[in-house]
Image (cartoon, rainbow, N blue to C red):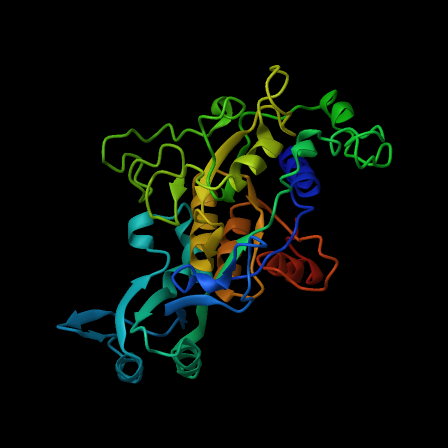
Length: 374
């Protein structure tokens, strides 16, 4: 089974992500960050305004409370920073008491329970706040909540001539390729067509589960019913088909298109006379929406999506997205998914540059260190 999971992940890597990289942005900021002409962002260093992330040390006995408009942490040096930088609200980024992680020992060992999202007044300089919190001895790290974007999928009408599966040198007709420069999918299908027990989480703009080539392949949370109650106790109410972290609800329907295209490449119903052929004929696709309707996403959404996918049974996690800023929070979430034996497949772009995009950069560092790269 493990070999099959790794094989599926490797094939997804080959097929899905020879794509164009884009830059980060702040969805709450001015639309000038986004170029309607190119469909990409113009600010590579953007982050969420009035918000940043803090991970406390093991020995930081923080206990947040509020009286009126004043927030207290229980530690005087932190309370001074909270006052100085006009902190309005503090919440756990991964609220373990609510989401009930699948592996609580791993969750706490990595320290996901010690990561908090700080909301501050709009006029606060986030970089200054981050630097000040970083200097506090009770803080392991502080960082902006960076922004990234989906990596592009070609909109050429010939894209669905899937030469990546089998290339005889003639497709697409306008740009013929090299014969046999493919993954030999038909030959592979003679040996293995996949298994329905393998769940592939699509961290993306969502998935159109009504699409005729995908409807039979969508993951269903068998322990959850649409009754307004968290039946399975995983912390997400009525997450029958997955979760939308961009809007914090149980409706991960694709409102952009990027995620549905990627889902079709991975697991469209095959040998059914409809649409395209998915690489895996039988896997289940778990929609996890971490990009909004204009393809933007906060790193905190991506990190939460990684934990959700891993906790709910995904063995392959697809992330066709990237941001230019490294993130410890994102790395901690990757470590958690790795700890639950997930294969994480990320896009790397094809702009022929040396730019490192994250979360790919996290996996690259793991590979160079000789561990856990898949």
